[in-house]
Length: 396
Image (cartoon, rainbow, N blue to C red):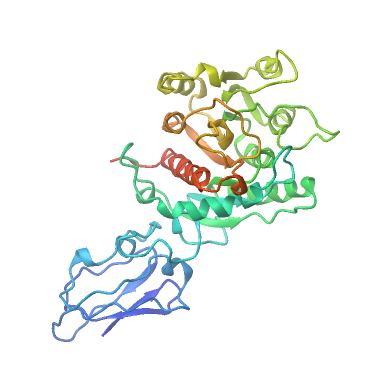
């Protein structure tokens, strides 16, 4: 009888197996696999994961096998991956309803140290101007992400064979003080940047992008910005306040956080208080692409132009789910009709492949207005697509 040990050294499960029937190796969740020196005998079972096993190992926990010989194909891909990477478990071996609710059921880590990229939630909604509820966005996105798998057949991207990725939980925001929440977010992202880890953020409302860019600009200098949204978010103030989800990019301009000649805003639309609502943005050098200029067409040519504009310098992607038409994404606080389609959203994100992306966010998912879960499911898929276009992600 042999033992598999968790990454903490705790006994995880026991199996009987053929002597020398499988190559010795390690995996991201299982550090050691020792082999029997007794006579050959068939596999009898793999017992269920013990309840006190490490969460990262539980995510790839075992299933039952009937009496037969152990084959290489019997071992879940989660166990046989390289020790360098974390790989989400396959639903072929682990039920989607099993395990801790992390993004894509990845291991939950307390620190970005050693990671190439990390999913991080910022559950904030006290800067909203219309319908609140985005504080519950990160949790709902994680729930829907259980349906996601490990590779992208459409683009050939192999993110989990290229980068060490984990979920590092949520920023501990202050729901009674927006200024203090910005400070807490900024401090958290300074640590992420210092660890050379690329953040993929689950929002939260759009105020959060301001302190995130404050932290990233300290490391990278002024960054380019691909901003996908129904709104420009460059208002000056509302109700006397200069920080809320309608002002983040004006504050970023004022503080020199953006390379304004490398800023593009896509999907902009809706009614306005003036007849020239985009003057400020264009005066800064932003490229503003209205939703009506995207109707009924592919955005692949547009993204070819934007890749040339962005060059090889650092760029940040900020995607507000309300860029999409509310027919596809009703679960948001400030919906606007006649928006982008999901296929156009994929064209935009996939069009960023090859760019020097230093961070991404997906914001403004408000589950209370999303009874089907489709908005959060769409958000989870777009975050996966963002992971797939990060630098150093290999393609098949």
